[in-house]
Length: 226
Image (cartoon, rainbow, N blue to C red; front, top):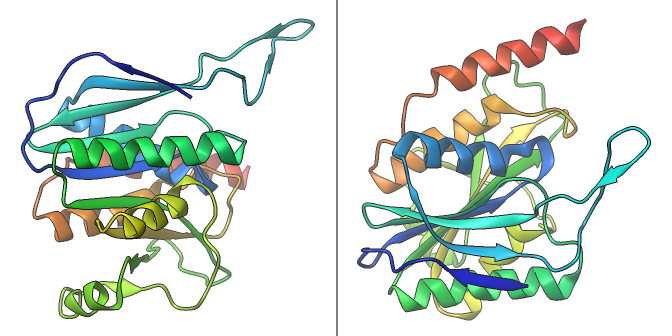
């Protein structure tokens, strides 16, 4: 991985929100929404030296410009969004470690990650957002905050799970938020909305008006039904 520092952000003990594209694009939808809503600024970029996919334009191919940005605003650092994740373990580990290094550099005390939670439960238009944390003690502190923990044991792969492991190894507290979805191949805007509302509750921050995401959810549903 190549890391490019564009500037030094003016942040003090920030919260970090870090997530990449995953099932239902939930991680990217939330990160991209926050960046647009809060008008964050880029200060660091991660780039992969090798493409993780190619784009067939119909008879010829293009190479994607794969990069993931660190952005900031008001003592908040946001990482990820965009498209895809590194496909090799070494690059994925390097990316997770860089997020941890950035957290330490700016004395961040907390990392939030988020993504999709595949379930067979029929939830209509109100998917739940489940949380899991880096310790039993932290989970206990969540009691009384009207949040639900993940309902069963599971393996969380990819960046949106692995970053919690890196946080735990480095004594940084972290919470993962995973929105219910039934169809992993379709963008899940309502799952993203559920996570945004949970994130607002836990961070005591208003992250923006989600009405446009609801409209996009309705458009996806219309296309899916047709």
